[in-house]
Length: 164
Image 1 (cartoon, one colour):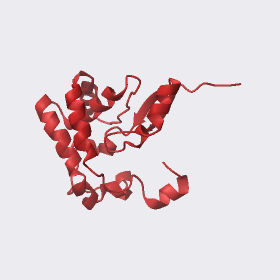
Image 2 (image 1 turned 180 degrees about the horizontal axis):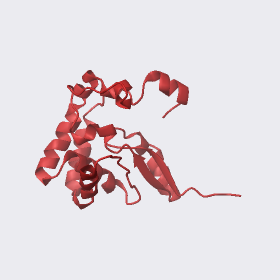
Image 3 (image 1 turned 45 degrees about the vertical axis):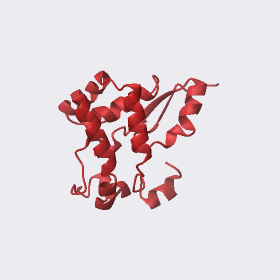
Image 4 (image 1 turned 90 degrees about the horizontal axis):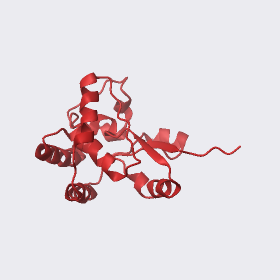
């Protein structure tokens, strides 16, 4: 029996753009949808986390290299970019990050997680954010100049699970 693949779920955001190289073109060629998880970079792209943020040891992010104070400080340039566009559009950085994903392809449907109703409302509001081709070009140009610091996962986790 052959079962067709209709969607693929993988991490994708302004903070992790690796799928753009091979995954997204392949999905487009095969007519397969894409469901990015962690579209807000585990909360970083909301603009609510900075170098002074600390995480309880039970918080998964406390063990992630991207969430060290040094990496958060280095990656602040990405938040500054989102903040500036969000201010122009009178929306939140999270809504810009989600609207950017929604603008990539019509078959890309991000799944931001939240435990708070007001964040759900905020996330849903990203659907109404209009990013012009110029906005998208500005975001892509600025993001291309930012080298994200810190690995996505601890080295041992990547060794155990292969390429995540």
